[in-house]
Length: 73
Image 1 (cartoon, rainbow, N blue to C red):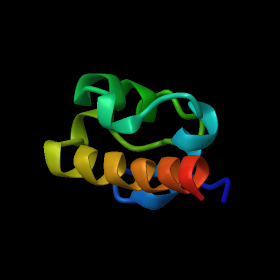
Image 2: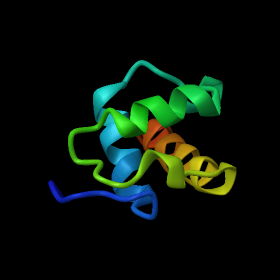
Image 3: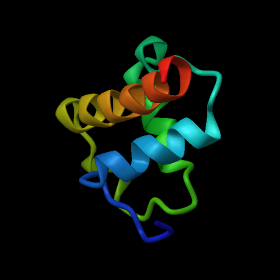
């Protein structure tokens, strides 16, 4: 999966965030924090200013799905 990621790669970003922050409940993360988590990923190469609430929410839900798989699966 190690490719250059953009804001549209919500599932891949969700997986990476789950791996990098396994102890974090994604639903408790503010969008400002989430933005920082995403832009700090080495694979993330998009313009940080291109994010919006819809994209961040989609990433949060993808991360949450990974979180549930890990903690309840």
